[in-house]
Image 1 (cartoon, rainbow, N blue to C red):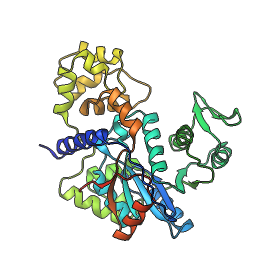
Image 2: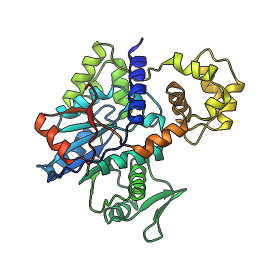
Image 3: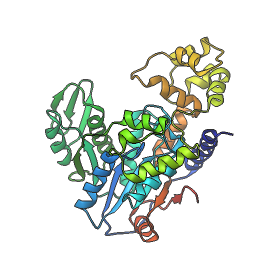
Image 4: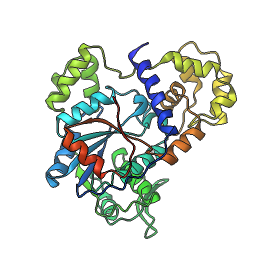
Length: 362
């Protein structure tokens, strides 16, 4: 089997293992300040490092926990990550994180589902502060101010509203980074997590291009991006390129075509993010000999990445009812991807309000 199919098979087993678990509340107490960042680190660049360093400087005696999207290695755009999460965790630890925790399976969930699971992770970890990068645009300062007052801020179609005061704060849509902040405010409010004063908003730095970074990886030439990433990131990328371990854009084509060609209409329509219209479109255009013909059968959805997200669902076909129950129990298990030292690990265990803590390799 290929590296990617091996990862996906392992992760499906981990998913259902977690699915069978129940959340066991821990009654430990701790005075440790826990700062939890959430980001993909795809790969970890200077913008991520700036946010981490800013938070660590503000809370020098804290435990810094990076929450990195986990199972199935697919981004919110449905596209395979550049590096497996264990390697992304290794980089995060090397530049300052104390603990790296596996976050929700972003690539097989809707954005609201992912947001809800991530917020439940913050609650389970008894998080004290949440650093988050933002882009300064007109009206954003007021939104950030309301969030740190603990107001329930939510994104509605073409406007941002303060549900606490029933005011419209901004007409129109927010850019992705800023939208994520309001999405988390909405989800944290839904689970009853008091986040007043907990967010540390860090203005994003310039001079980092994700497009150029990805191009440099594919070309194995980092001259144009040498100043965009910590040296450790570049060293690990070069190491993984040399061992042919970059997974960016690599899919389990056989698994996807099997689901598209062989699943019944009923099986397809019950998958997460599917409906009867999409299932019918896939069934009506069979058979598929390659991903290109399958992508043509998937109509455009609510975003430009809809087709890639559907490919990720077919690659890891899980019924929406299972996903729903998985979310209800999330995080049944808190899986650690890497940690700085045993002292940090023990502090984390004492802080977290969940007895089910495991290591990815354990």
